[in-house]
Length: 205
Image (cartoon, rainbow, N blue to C red):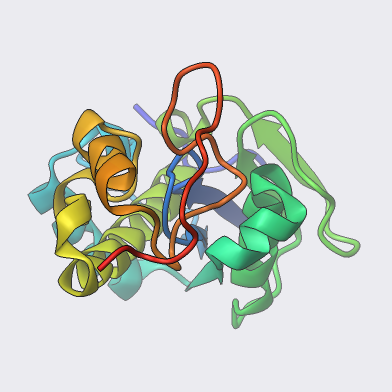
């Protein structure tokens, strides 16, 4: 059973990201403020749910949350500031958009860059412990999936509608054969193995 909150007397926003380990695409993050009495037996870490369950829960979260928002950091920004900082920035951008100012942030993971003067608590595997973090994980995951499905229409060869930019064998084989796209993270080890092989920066014809 997931916990409803850490601090009962504070307006608390759960934060989580999606796409940190991908080779391509933006990193997404969400921030969610749930009512203190929010209950949903299905709500859990997005990785423990089916795609159908995640999208059904997204509708519930968006309808019942006191506030929610999604933040995005582009592949180019990821290459400039690294993926850890990009994950923090995506969460900051999500919190920026909340129409209720949180008094405390519950953040999935073990590290976070302080957001303004708002105190925070990091929680390892928090998306399996707190409802608000689980809700944020579902929003981040589903909105990023929508984004990657859209990119798949532009570059179908990379199988992004299935792998969502993660380093599968098929994705890496496509990079080796066709080169990279503008959506690939050029600072990542795109081909795997011990070294980064030389890649064309533009997609091959």
